[in-house]
Image 1 (cartoon, one colour):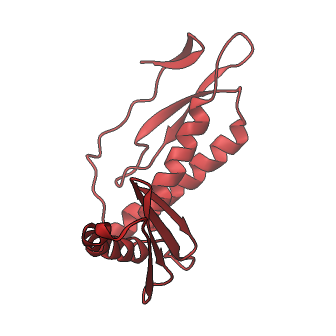
Image 2: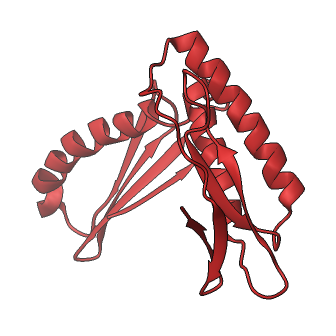
Amino acid sequence: MLITSIANVITIQIFKNHDKIVVFCFSRATIGIRIHLRNNHHIMKISTFKYFLIPLCLLMLSTQCDENSEPLSKEEQLISLKTEIENLANTSICDGIFECKFIAFGSKSCGGPKSYLMYSTSIDTEQLESLIETYNQNETQYNTENGIFSDCSIVIPPTSVNCENNTCVPVY
């Protein structure tokens, strides 16, 4: 089975013994079916496919992304920004040239950071620090607006950061 989608048109092709069924879905309201057969004794089998393919096609159209889809929620924005920050920090390497550092990352609802993020100066540290500042402010605002609770424990920062196998490792 081959399923392709272009804009609002979904094409499903099923190949069996060189017979081909093509289902075109032009919109949510209209469906066109074209059946190409080499001989007529396959018509009964194809009618069962028709009852399977039409609902499948409708399901695919009803779940497609619209250009006017809703913007990301605050929580999804936080998750996306956190992933971006972690990916940037994970690309950093340490060696004799680049220095390891750490920064407070995240915001607990009762104050203070959730954790500390290790990174090295091999990356754009200004960009990382700016992203973390934005993330921390947004998480503080999200926690306040949504009544988020945390354990309020104090996260101890590392006493130093060592470079081991080109990776920054915290020392407590």
